[in-house]
Amino acid sequence: MPTPTDRPNDLQAQRDRFHAELDKMSIIPLWLNLGAAAQHEPNVAAVPHIWRWNEIKPMMLRGGDLITPQEAERRVLMLINPSYEKKSARTVGMIFGGIQFLMPGEIADSHQHSPNAHRFIIEGEGAYTAVDGERTIMKKGDFVTTPAWKWHDHGNESDQPMAWLDGLDLPFVNLMDANFFEDYQDGNRQTQPIFRNNEDSLHRWGRGMKPAWEQPAEPRQSPILNYRWTDSRANLHALREDEGSPYDGIIMQYVNPHNGGPTLPTISAYLQLLRKGEHTKSHRHTASTIYHVAEGGGGSLIGDREILWQEGDTFVIPSWMEHEHWSIDGEAVLFSYSDRPILQAFGFYREARGERRG
Ligand code: GTQ
Image 1: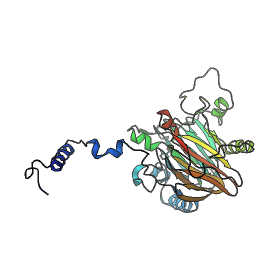
Image 2: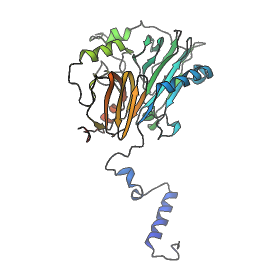
Image 3: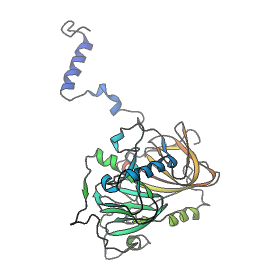
Image 4: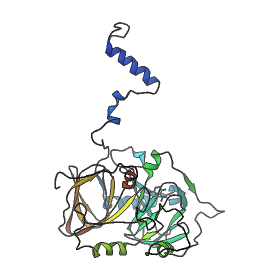
């Protein structure tokens, strides 16, 4: 390689030297990294992936023998997209999913953090979650919200292990450098006091009425602690004769009664029924989605990857990847959540019909 001193008029050599000097100044010229700024379509790193319940469950039971919730802070198996860094706390797009479990008699102490969270109960019955002074006894299929900066703890008073899928906006909060965390401590007490009746939030905000003397503390967060499986499932079946969405069948969004919007400011959650023999049309959108199979079995074609799923499995659909779903051997119910509110808030949400089955 000739040096610029050898051939002072060599343009490439002058450019190389220019770029090298810029590099030392922590500067890179746009023309060397045009992909980062100008793309015809999103350059999505995440891949479609499924975590199967029959593989997770034995690991969960082993984890139960090996570490306590106190040692772990939260005993969670983090689901990390194979294409992301293991320590990214990122499952797909701007959202995280993890499997949290409590053995009989165990307690996960109170803490609070700036990331928003929710849970969908996978297995078991009889453990409680307490949020902001209210407790709810959880059952399989229940959807529980734990909004940002609210004390929350979990306890398993049943005689069986209890497992749920945690959903958090961790990747987004970490990108914004806005992740704060605090452990609860009041003397020897590691769990918050309970000062509301069970179902208080439901009676106060969730039954088509609200207290006329009270303003919501934080209107961007749903005040409802537990959206019960029996109610949510019954809603889907009540609408089963409707055409529904061509892309998702009978799909309903869990709503924040304060504003009709998503249950968390950053994450929107849904429950959908795929009827017997139903096969949806394909589409794609810039929201990244985590799916959990609440009931039944079926399949999804995501990009060119076909994933067959059954009850308890968790899988992801990355941004802008064409996808369609079908039920197998009867009906299926899918719980899902996505980062769509983040995209919509800033005008980045985009949706297009698919080319396969448009
Ligand atoms: O329940 O607070 O899956 O802080 C990861 C981090 C759950 C929680 C997770 C958390 C939590």
